View 1 (cartoon, rainbow, N blue to C red):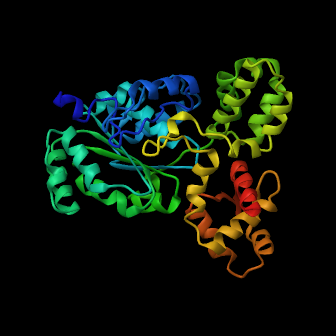
View 2: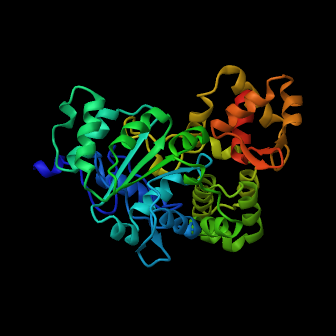
View 3: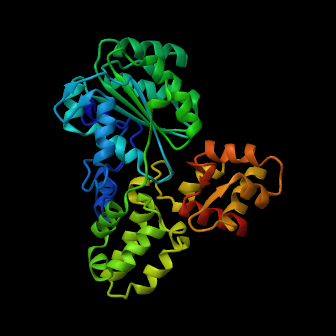
Length: 387
């Protein structure tokens, strides 16, 4: 029927690329696999699924909702931040937070005309993306417009009188976000997610409009691992907490580790050796990412290394080598000052290289002239030296 070919728009959010995005820090691999099997082939416009687990993000949800003018859990409309950029480490859960926000009851009430969702990635087809939003709003012919500029104007006309939350996930270039900024109606809010601080700074109208999504707290990270591998966490609580600490509380790393531990335990094997091995992070890189990270075009699930290397592939050869060397000499935790980086790289361009790594989301300022590389990125850096 015609409706089967039309994108779905609902208050819960719309994924206009057909990407299945998991809302919550984790969904069991078997459940996600069942979701994919039941919905293949994917249709553009299918909404992200409702989260089965969403752990440790209450504070972040409150902060983002307050930015949208939703105050004190009472749906009282306050000043609305019209553009918000959510950024953080690769694998920290930016997409998950945005998807959970789209499904939140208070958000649905605050934006009665609904939520439009779009995940664009590194090489977006922007005209097609705008056309899909146009179809969701009842206009079938945006794809027939000869230029992106004209499609943007038409979409802006459709959104002019709407009060909607517009979510553009996984932005890699500032230019890719511009049509959505131009099309946003005056009553709507626009939320971007990106792993790159330089993109977040360019998209946010003020520094306050950037929301830096942190890793989970130690306790919430342990709760996440416990939800994934309950038997292991109950039997080996100290070892599990040590693992959470060494993986530096990154949701992506915890999801993969949790699935591995649960599988090993379910098969009747001892997990003590695996718990120890996972603490280095090396085993995680070669594992497949959670099923919600599936590449729908290739019908494959990438490895953790492939997901992380999306950032390193954007570096020039010299900067990529410096990133790799930094991993090789990284202390625990992996923090550096400029003098240490200069010594490792043996170059007078250390500040310029560090700025590039920061802009690519591979190095994070932590104050007092020091910078941090996440533990999983340290493992990735070391693997690049072997290559």
